Image (cartoon, rainbow, N blue to C red):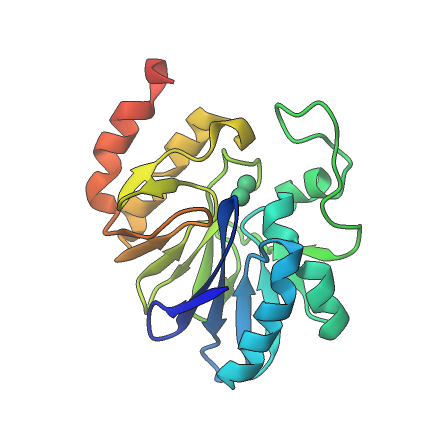
Length: 227
Ligand SMILES: [Zn+2]
Ligand SMILES: [Zn+2]
């Protein structure tokens, strides 16, 4: 596993297995422990725990998921065996990941985590999602029905999960085969225009700097008839 500190409070942990998989460790604002954003595949659990230990900023206090696909929740159960912490995901995502509903465009329901493991992100009146210290959750559906992204305002880093992929610093669409509603995902990409992160992180490819600059041409390229 490769580890890189990408901002004052955030480390990217990357693993390879045909695809690249990234998870993020964020030092909590209150100085008490860290937050894990996404949980990759099962084989990453040991290295994630070893890194958190070595970092010395305290234990994992919570796990925040961008969505419930199996390659984003893989190490959750192993981490919970080690340390019992809450695991948050958008409430819309829960019936899909708990196997009650098949993800859109999938024939069969698939349980990626057992029931009673995840808790719903709180939705305030007006639709604002929970924040966790400096990390604010934002709804960005399309790749999956309840996909969210997490913005670290102070560090200007957006943890984007599978909202995008990238190639050589350019924004690319999320992987079509695994995307529930591509047009909705394209519309959700406007979140980078609103937040203007300096750095966008995505799970399966490299970072994109100042992605807001590219968003108009990205949307024009992939919207409407140009599917
Ligand atoms: Zn996904
Ligand atoms: Zn993924």
